[in-house]
Image 1: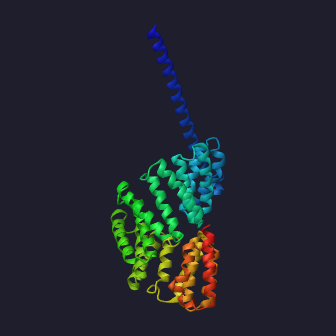
Image 2 (image 1 turned 30 degrees about the vertical axis):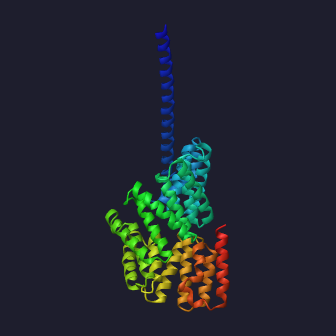
Image 3 (image 1 turned 60 degrees about the vertical axis):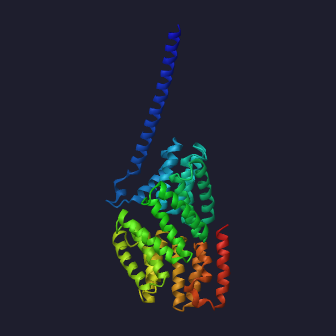
Length: 403
């Protein structure tokens, strides 16, 4: 009797286990089918004429998918949020921040509702949204959200989890963009130490933190330390990534900028010319890092050698940025600011003030606005009565942007 009862219980347990497993298999199969259907629709062109030969672009496919995601995956909000998160981050990596912001915001909202606010996937979406807001120039929002994600990840995942380390690195750059260099440096040293131990000294994210730290040290005027760090990073980049990898080229340009700060103009300009030539060939003339090097070369006293050529290069860069990133992008504003510095060096006061006002009203970062008062490139306009008013406006601009 006892044996029969035990057998019956075992049979029931086995049946329950089979039912659970069957539901799991069915659920996974249905989800796989939904993914297949959605991906198929992504690449489907409803009318042959829509393809225009081979002219359909990855951007067009992405735009179509981001529109279809609301209906195509409506029955599976968890999967829908996952795809929104992926596509939102892709848009951000392409510099299309508003599209990325929209998708990531919805991914965060859905994941909080479906998975909970402390789920690792939810926290990853929050951190991704914080990074996108930073790229948009919305620094106070980015810092607040970035701290929220980091604090929760430290508690839920631990301080040395890869997601936690990535959020810490991202937050440090948001602090940098607001001119909070001491806070940024402190967080970067902490993060870098953990990354070297957990991820390894040659991991991509470890190398990125080294680069960010070099920038921060440079802004603090510690050029010798920044020089040393960038040279160490170039050696690692050459071994891990190769001479023509985008990150190696970007680090080389960063070193050139530091050389310029140290007054080693000829070395800086030569390095920038070599880097720019490779970037144009490997990355393209309109790629973000290529434009950064162009700006550095145009600004270098040992660079183009002629103001007219420098101005032409900066205007060309700004035109591309306006078209690709938008007129309100912080990077576009940064180039406008550089045009102001060039005008000041040429003794063109009216043009310098005009460019500075334009930059401040169209996305200039708080850190750069606060630096106007002491920027040596603007020295020629310091005696102008308008300069004091401009500095006051810049401080108000920075304060408003940080609220």
